Amino acid sequence: MSTSTQTRNVPASELKQRQSGSPSTGQSDRGFKEGDGRNYQAWVAKAAKQPMVLETVDLGPLGDEDVEIAVEHCGLCHSDLSVLNNEWGFSQYPAILGHEVVGEVTALGPNAKGLSVNQRVGIGWNSGSCMHCHQCMSGNHHLCPQVQFTIVGHRGGFASHIRSHWAWAIPLPEKLNLAEAGPLLCGGITVFAPLAMYAKPTDRVGIIGIGGLGHMAVKFAAAYGCDVTAFTSSESKFDEAKGFGANHVVCTKDSAALKKLAGSFNLLISTVNVKLDWDAEIGTLAPNGRLHVVGAVLEPIPVAAFSLIMGQRSVSGSPTGSPMAIETMLDFAARHNITPQTEHYPMSKINEAFARLESGKARYRIVLDADS
Ligand SMILES: [Zn+2]
Ligand SMILES: [Zn+2]
Picture 1 (tube, rainbow, N blue to C red):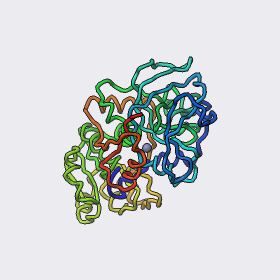
Picture 2: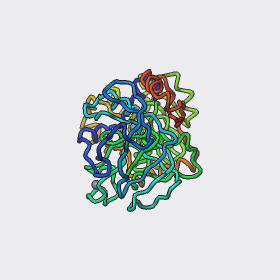
Picture 3: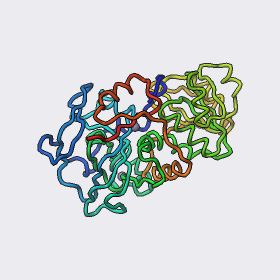
Picture 4: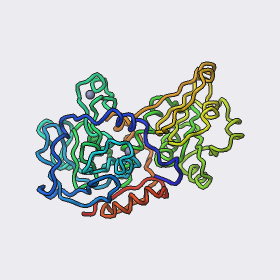
């Protein structure tokens, strides 16, 4: 992700889900043995804030409903850094991070459905869910109380191989540039989902924060046909935001500019994790407008009842997305040639890549390419 604190954004959903713990789906709770494996290599974090080391890892027998994937590329999301540093207090070590995986199916459990060996698939923030609860049965697998995070209590994608439940290994459209597709699987779906749920092509949409998430949001909203305004505190991003498809760019610190926009937007998507002038932001919503939060700002967002009631406005949030939502997003991205702007590192330089992410200088997402 990128320069300002804006880009240290964690989808709020990820935090919420983390707070509810990391229940097992049964498919990913096997022992995590090291050193006696079968040529599976993984970058392992032994403890919080420690550099990762390459080790041989035994993934055990493949679960009946699981698939195994040889990792080709894996995006580096700020949440990987947060779990490495145990910022949320529930990391499990040893940890194998990486949850924006692109790779090729190498093995299928006997009950894995809909996939074939050699197929290209992607895995995002989640890699399993119970498949029988109300949420799973209604197509909202990402809201399953037992959803399995890919990098907590499960081995992630900074490795030669990764496994997931078949439903969470999402087939990648052939037209998609696989080397750039990784960040779509977490950051991309996080910002695409609210557009798909709430935006119409005729809408005026504001994207708050132009970083790892926000720059993809601008691209999606522009391709959707919306009139897009990018909000950023970093003037150095103004031109780039326009390059991503923003029709207008506004400095978040410019309260006079915000005032002029009063009553303008049908949908605002906030990707930042810093405190903003929320009153002014909500004031830019048109009647029936919605402020939708996907960046995990930790301080509460104050909302005046009157500003919601009088304009019939809403404030909402959402997590990453269901397998079907991810598939739809990938199809849309392939159709419109939407890929994130990335910096690539060979996976063997993983610790350098994490340092680059931590420096806040990456524009806008980092992808690690398998090289072992
Ligand atoms: Zn992520
Ligand atoms: Zn479920």
